[in-house]
Length: 388
Image (cartoon, one colour):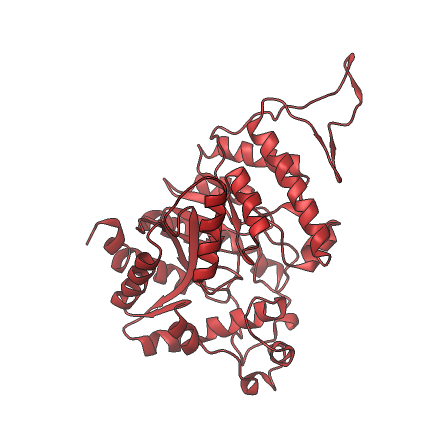
């Protein structure tokens, strides 16, 4: 049963010239002032979510995006700041891109944020998907196997550091600690200081391919899954949900479909479905322009992907429409009762599901994001949180 709601803000600033008729993504180069507006926008969204009774605001780590779509380089620092401006909402790391970190620095920073926010940060880890980000930090991304090996070793180190009183590690990429003399003895192990206040640490990871081996590694550490939202818009598919349930069963847990998962969905509320689609179409199109070249729009040909960067071809490329997204259920559009119906159907299909993330895509201006979240909290959320 759905009882908790979160929302992902990946860090997009307000943009001009959006949609298929707007500026191609690679031609954007925003001013320093516009890029820094991400922090004021994050503050406004955090306060709206807190006031509206949402449970978690999820943030995404990204780097070097002068185009303005994802502009938060350190979500733990931002989470600490936002916790001081809000009363109760938690802040989720969706996600810390682990290959761009030394695993011990990430573990330390999370533990510190856990203390400084009074336990209001939810840990999250991911492998990354931007070559401009991951490869610039001297980590592999184009070599998928190398990225996976690095990530898996980092996760092992992080969970040792977060949960063990003293730890050491010897692996392909790291020797922790190195065998060096220290104050009269040879170093053999380390202790994370201070350790997190909340243990065991709650942690989430995105589920994309639902590879059984990857899912088994998640369950080994008690990591929970997030499906859809952000770049990977599109909601959940039964095959992915069942693959996760099977992984939990292999780990010795018999669960209802949807347990230990968060599903991310996009919504836009208006007086009618037609008006909602009309209002949201530019945001849908801008989101496609951003993420299609990164492989996050299913089923596109190479020609269609190329057309998303060419205003002369984009309208004739046969790209997926918002109407089709609404029909498939990956976008919830229309009056509040239609959104309630969509969520009720999701709840019926996945009885173990407790948490859903809802929000807007990149390109959506602050005023619209805030207005939509307020409407959702007042007109949709009470149907699931007992207020209606």
